[in-house]
Image 1 (cartoon, helix red, strand yellow):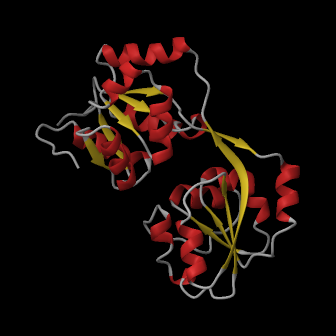
Image 2 (cartoon, rainbow, N blue to C red; image 1 turned 45 degrees about the vertical axis):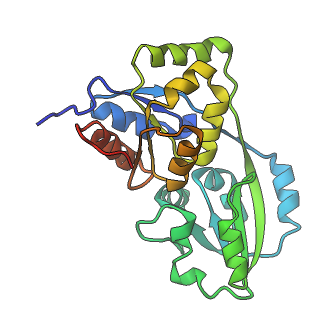
Image 3 (cartoon, rainbow, N blue to C red; image 1 turned 90 degrees about the vertical axis):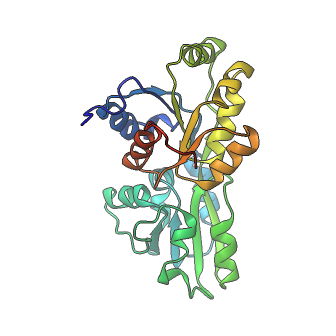
Length: 258
């Protein structure tokens, strides 16, 4: 039995710096080489601006936190509402902050799964506050409005593109050319978009030939649209263990692409 199934395998970790440690540790625990290259940063919106916005909103019956960063910067704005969390990492962050999670989808990690919970079916007349970063998907809001809820957004952070100088991008490209990067992990379409924006033309050509592991079919679709034929594998979820399990599987001889 191979006790280090990822020995000699380089994994490009594109998660934000503050959220990458778990995946880095999981890759290294399996003998792999984790290469940190965060392509999204979360910057908090000035608290005075968030407070001013919150004061214009209705008192929520339900507050949905969509990410760990939403918890970090926005948990204080849930008031006495029932708290819903998108995904286990977000739920864990809520609980670590001393607040109970009232609505969650067992085993689920995205908006689609949260929307299947019994508590979010009959929401007619209820005020739902979605606490999030700037922009993002509209699925939660649109679906809950269709179900009769009053949905309001409270944006508490911005997702921005990190700054890298030419030498830093060139160093990543050098690792690719040298055969050091074997797998790329991408958790969202925005992550893929930012990665493409940051890389040089040569790196993009190499990216299109590198196996991409993701928990989201949307990412696979976007990757194939941008890089027809790119090898991809769908992980069972966004947690570090899910991703590493998929990476290990992707290294097996004869493994089919998703």
